[in-house]
Length: 167
Image 1 (tube, rainbow, N blue to C red):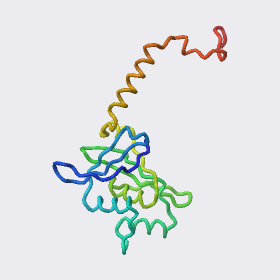
Image 2: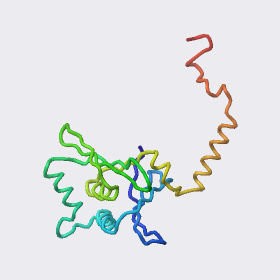
Image 3: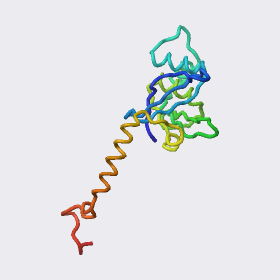
Image 4: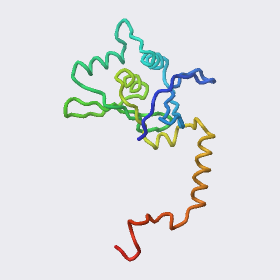
């Protein structure tokens, strides 16, 4: 799993649908997830630390967690099937841990309100992420190719730790 942060909300140029954009810690990969207008407003409100005059749905959920002595440990975006993302809320109450099915947009809105980490399975990132810094990716690949082309078998033997005939 890879921890990601909310980079912001964007609008799809063609459909004008909101997209929540998650980025990894190195800002090298971005995961765009299409969401609804209400979820976009809720995520923006949480990012901007806006407190509504009355609790909205995600605020209500957080209030219920707190009232029942529960904490949101993290959310996990764990699957992508037929262009639909799937997420889990990992909730703890004392020694009891539960996984609750959720839409990613709702999970993200709640995670932002509770300062909980957002994790994404590697398979989901591999299937749906987009490169943010293509030049850095290419430079890293070239550096790795250069490293491999200059690698000799004796470079792999750690001197002093193993001698031929030991073992």
